[in-house]
Amino acid sequence: MDLMNPSALGIQAQNVKAWFGAKEVLHGLSLEVLPKHVVAIIGPSGCGKSTFIRCLNRMHEVVPGARMEGRILLDGEDVSQHDPVALRRRVGMVFQKPQPFPTMSIYDNVASGLKLNGLRSGPQMDQIVEESLHAAALWDEVKDTLGKPGTSLSGGQQQRLCIARALAVKPDVILMDEPCSALDPIATAKIEELIYALKKSYTIVIVTHNMHQAARVSDETAFFLMGELVEFGATSQIFTNPAHKKTEDYISGRFG
Amino acid sequence: MNTNASTRDVVNVAAFGVTALCAALTLGILFFILGYVLIHGIGALNWDFFTKLPKPVGENGGGMANAIVGTAKLVGLAGVFGLPIGILGGTYLAEYGRGRFSFFVRYAADVINGVPSIVVGIVAYTLVVMPVRHFSALAGSIALAMILIPISLRSTEEFLRLVPNAIRESALALGLPQWKVILFVVYPSALSGISTGALLSLSRVSGETAPLLFTAFGNRFWSSGLLNPIASLPVMIFTYSIAPYDDWHRQAWAAALVLLMLVLLANVGARLMLRRRTYT
Ligand SMILES: Nc1ncnc2c1ncn2[C@@H]1O[C@H](COP(=O)(O)OP(=O)(O)OP(=O)(O)O)[C@@H](O)[C@H]1O
Ligand SMILES: [Mg+2]
Image (cartoon, rainbow over all chains, first blue to last red; front, side, top):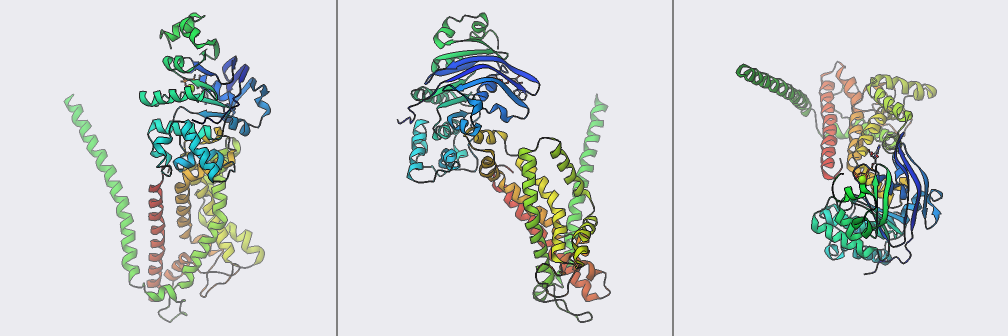
């Protein structure tokens, strides 16, 4: 499997605060994601997990009235200095609900990021599409039906299609917001396997409600509570020997 | 309990009965109009009607070829002037519009939608006809465009809003600039809705009479170019039906039938298009 990306970058968040209108939902979070590591973000509903990762690729500011403060460094560079469009090409995102472009074929969905950024179709495009579908572990299932609509796939296949679409623009970092929450256990296992394979070449931040999933796929885990970072450390340590009582309560299912 | 239940039943039946009756009445009116126009119009409809010019007053026969082409020209031009403005404006409201400005645009569009079309005709008369002292196809199509713009603006906005926001976010997250997201992802998803709206707005203005009386006026011959008065089906229906000649009355019915069929065709076509795509 060609995973296409030798130069994954790290991300640092420094004192990140975020607002929706006048409501502050992140109260100064700092954490560091090392290159080619997988960081899982866990925490009860509404604690700001989605908001946080949407700050990382500046999707937060797309929401009317939303803003953020603090610094986010991609490979040491402040992302607020980047053009957001260019930044999002380097920091890809997979959403909770698979969302293939409804009017495009499977092939065009994967190619969309490149095509709409001006790459001509041709052998090079074919190759990137094939590589991306391989990397998303979907190639064998769709290689004979690339012309069919992306929406004709099953939910799990659609989610892998969206992962392939994100991989095709060759990002350095991949953000995943509960990528398995709409999927059955078999499709979930496939995506987890995939994350495991992808981390050889990508830096990944994944939000999940599933403790087992966090424990299985991640190197480090961050526990959020009401817009604060309660604990951040090696996954093995967080799950076996958390430093905070609240982390332990949450992990063992006593609240949240 | 028992009395309660039976009152409820009576109210239920009454509510069902009254609403069903009104629904049937609406349908009845539609079929009555269709049938009435069909019965009166079909007799005068012949090949000459589509191919010949009107005969001079007093002679029987002739047709309305010039008015059919005239309506096509007026409505076509109104579409060329109005649809880009309506569609792009609607795009602004749905994709960029958040603040007070959009509120006023939306409000203005709704107000213009409610203004009697004869007022629009007078405005177009003042703006386009007065300065050159000449009725013209151009003035007529501008009047129609003024009616068409708010309709297509609002329908475009509605259909774009039906495209889930998650699709826009997915596209933005791929590193696409917003204009490309709108052009290549959002528009295709709403295409059938937008074109349906465009078609319906065209069919709506194709029946307008009052604004054309002051602008396109009318013409018993072929009209060349954009700067001459031009015939149209609605105005022909108007002038022929108030004239004292039986033959003209029959031709007015035929013209009404043709116009009705055109509008019906556009509506059915629009429905068929609507059925095809996901987000409509
Ligand atoms: N578009 C929005 N407008 C206003 N407030 C919002 C918006 N989106 C989220 N919020 C608020 O921000 C806070 C954090 O939301 P966020 O979606 O980041 O939580 P989350 O941890 O991802 O929750 P979940 O696990 O349910 O996805 C919540 O209190 C939520 O009500
Ligand atoms: Mg969330």
